[in-house]
Image 1: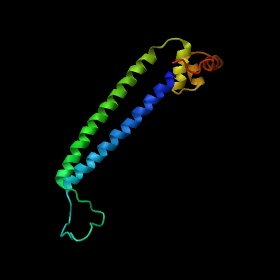
Image 2: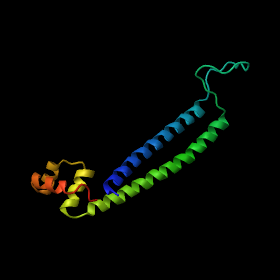
Image 3: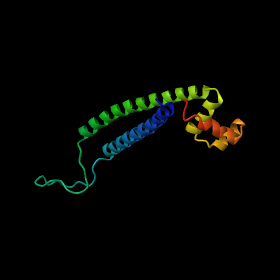
Image 4: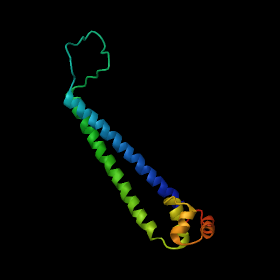
Length: 141
């Protein structure tokens, strides 16, 4: 297994999970607004026809039930996100502890997304030497 690819996958998972949490939070806000504002300008309802137009009428008990289900799901999704973030922090700490020029070059190249010139400047080596080190290490993490 390629550790760098797994790390990148974890970072992508965190971004996706954050999108899921954000989406659920938006839905929850919309339902709360619907519950607080309620329907407006209702003068009469014709029960002989199907409802038309843009208005959506949902009973208060259905809104409350939906809000409770969404809050439970949101709690679970936030816990998943937090676990993934904790794992990433742990991995970041371990990666930072790697010693040796090869590991540093791979980390800076693949995770920090630095150019070989930037890596050479930071580490105090010539760019030619860093290119050689980089080329012999597709990924060692």
